[in-house]
Image (cartoon, rainbow, N blue to C red):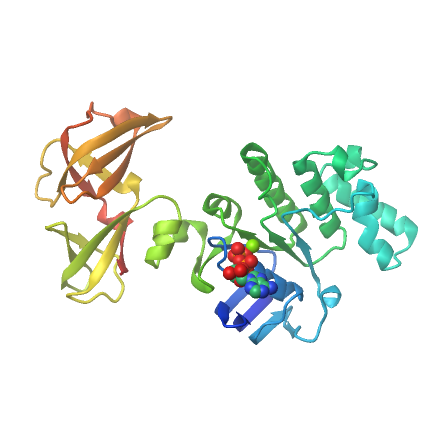
Length: 357
Ligand SMILES: Nc1ncnc2c1ncn2[C@@H]1O[C@H](COP(=O)(O)OP(=O)(O)O)[C@@H](O)[C@H]1O
Ligand SMILES: [Mg+2]
């Protein structure tokens, strides 16, 4: 995967005074499933609309398959878009909806029939070909919307929160189906969601956007385990953020004072003595003991909540400063810790990240 299908070079978008997309550089590789992830209003839809050609960038360049597309209208760009609200024609059957674009392009009738049938099979909707949109569930309508996009054999599919209107169970199922379809067809997917779990499950790479700016682009595992900014650490999954101050550095580690104790960390890029930092520790990288841990700094706190959540125990330990720390441990390691008990908290420094504040 080295051929670049979509390239954004320093793209900016202003609506009046508002700077919506900020100096965005992005390379999407051929056949890749790349997700733009960020909270509502961060500029994801605007970015997709610029790639599709419905909006022009205020500055910067967009290239599709190496070609600057500034002068190309949406219908001349080799991309298809799937929106959250399906946008199916209510008066047309499923078959007519899927074939609509091909009919507009004056594709021969027998070819339309064949390609529509292929697309129906891809999304497993052959049995629904003669129904109208209102005679189907939301999930079925969304499958038709996907079929309508892939019937054009696009090299790129842009998907803007396509599963946003579905309930949780159906969403999970459709995530799996879409991912499977993308792998089977080898189409480049540029997917948009505000749901971090959805992004991590489906994507080859995730681009985290915050206030119009790209914070980090990486594999799901790297985004989760090695967040580069406080925003990414906080937005992806659940994490404990400890405010601290760097009190010493060596070639391989930094020492950070947190809540009065000194901790050492390996992963801290460019931190200097005196810097105010945040340390991000995932709940499952935290440990909790009754006895003071030998030779290790630990934070003392009181268990204020201890609940069994299926396969794990989730414990809230409140520190004297009022900070609530989340600890997740396998159910088997319970060790009979009770609410109200005093415990020592330590963590796996190899799985912790020191971030600029
Ligand atoms: N046509 C427009 N005119 C003015 N402001 C807009 C327009 N479209 C979007 N915006 C604003 O741009 C920001 C980003 O919107 P959008 O790209 O839709 O975010 P997202 O898809 O990440 O939720 C929002 O503050 C939104 O109000
Ligand atoms: Mg949007």
